Amino acid sequence: MNKHLKSILQYVGMILLTVLLLWLSLRGLHVGEGENKTDFLWKAWETSNKVYLGLMALIAVFSHLLRAERWRMLLAPTGNKVGLTNSFLSLMIGYLVNLGVPRGGEVSRCYNLYKLEKTPVEVSFGTVVVERIVDVICLLILIGFSFVAEWKKLKGFIDTLDFSSGEGFKIPLWVILGAVAGIGFLVALYLLRKNEKLLKIVRGFKEGLLAVFRLENKTLFLTYSIGIWMLYFMMSYCVIKAFPETENLGFSAVLTLFAMGSIAMAAPLPGGAGSYHTLVPLGLVMLYNLPQPDAVAFVFIFHGWQTLLMIVMGLLSLLASYWILKWKKPSTK
Image 1 (spheres, rainbow, N blue to C red):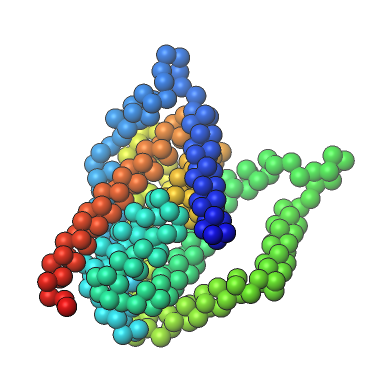
Image 2: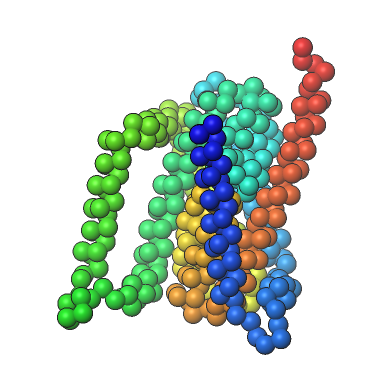
């Protein structure tokens, strides 16, 4: 009972945090006299280029197909050969569940695949762990590239922060970053030693990562992984080109905003809602001098369009899975 209550409280807490971040984001949306915020957001949608938004949707579908194919590849060495259709349907159902239950999609897609293909949940979940590790590595590389591409803007922003002691002494940036990294390492080490459960999770991640090296075609797996993230980048590029306020941003700006958006989406909140609406507008305003109302409107429409695609594809995948199982049922005993 205590565990169930703890889970409920955690979920309620995440929902409340999401609502708070969305409220803070909308609260900072200042519109002209006689214009309400809803009309402002709707006007931004009307002025958007629907061709680019449609292209973004097509790229999104292709990226999900590629991810489903990569999942099939990871499952093959375990002796479970699944179809691309069932892998894709399970993946999209997982994305749909993630919109309501953060990180719940990882389990639900494994369970749906079990119903469709009889793949053991614990086996498929192990491959999901591998996927997550690979995605984290890709994200870290992406963040590194964005720092290199926009270092002058990022450094200029950091330099505006006041780290002085008030007596003319200024702490060097490398000292601050080193101290933060050192403290983080010590805290992580302490938690690993004191929390056996967390230690087991870390060991499981290590085993999952090593499983990649047992793949027959490692080059193809790497190609899939790079291709998935390139498609994600192209999605961001299309959406940025779809709005007059952001269409003139360069390649490096798209890369930086894509990295910031990926970090925000990784937060344990339903569909990244709240964290995405807080972090990305901040980057648009601070780094690229975009007017704050335009930045907020851009992010709300971008995230809303992305979420709508997830809902539609997830519901269609649920319906398709239901009919596939119903069609198979007469042949089972």
